[in-house]
Structure formats: structure tokens, C-alpha cells
Image (tube, rainbow, N blue to C red; front, top):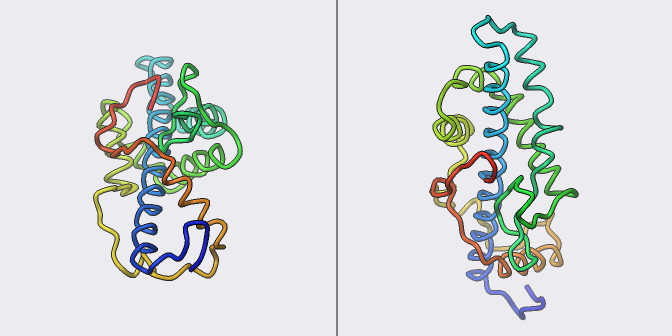
Length: 193
């Protein structure tokens, strides 16, 4: 394969593939964490509002339905040196890339979490924030960064659906990233992720 960086050997392609898969895993992990934090906050607000009164099913639905559109839409990818990182944040004091694919991506992960795991969200809602996020993202959605990439998932030839231009753009993006994060090592706070 020939491109801006000259000919890429199959070994270099495999290495680039592994790196791109790690970027995808980190983005999904961060999007899951942000979504889980917002679901936890919405349910905590509902419990505080209702105090000791029994919460009805429709009230849970009213609290959880708008999370992806209203709360998670405030998230963007943190920027470092004007380049996007692999970490979503809602902190307005931090430079963020919002809108376009980043906004749709976190909204889609949030919707997937709700659609596929609503019962788990309800069952674990009273856990502490960090434990709730770990349970929802690592145990329930199985967003893990430590799992190695097996050879079948990392082809040594350019996938037919990926253009050479896209592949080199992804390589450029990967090389521009200054931050390496591991999902389980990031401290979760209410104001930032």
C-alpha cells in the first residue's frame, strides 16, 4: 500500500490497525462513562425529588428518556493543542470539539446503553457513581480496553470498505494524539469525564 508515508508493510498496517482499534475502544469507553454518569445523575435527581415516595414506572421513563438528547448532548471531545483526544467531557472550561460525528457518537452510545440495558440501569441505580459506571460500562456493556486484539480482527490488508485516504487520515489523527488513557484509570467526577 502506498500513501503519504510511503509503502506500508503488512506489519506496519497491522500495528496501525491495532492502534486504530485501541482509539475506537477508548472513544467507546469514554462515551459509555459519560452516558452512565448522566443516567446516574438523572436517577439521583428523581430520587431526591420524590424523597421517600414510591417512584412510578412512568416517572423513571420521563427521567431517563431525555438523557441522551438533553444531557449527553453537552459533551464533546477534549482538545489538547487544538487536536481532539479520546476523552469526552462536558466541562465548559476545557476546550472541546462538539457537534458533528463526536456528538452523534456519544448520543448513539448513550441510546444503545438505554435501549439494551435499561433493566440493568434500574437495578444498579443506587450504587455509588464510580461503582455504577464500572458496572454499566465494564460488566454490562463489556467495554474493556485490556482485551488483546486477535489477528482475525486486525487484517494485514486495507479493508475494502476503507479508502486509502481515510486510512491515512486515521493514521494522522492517531499520530497527533498526545494523550493515552486507560478507561479504568480515569478518575470520574461529576463535572468532567
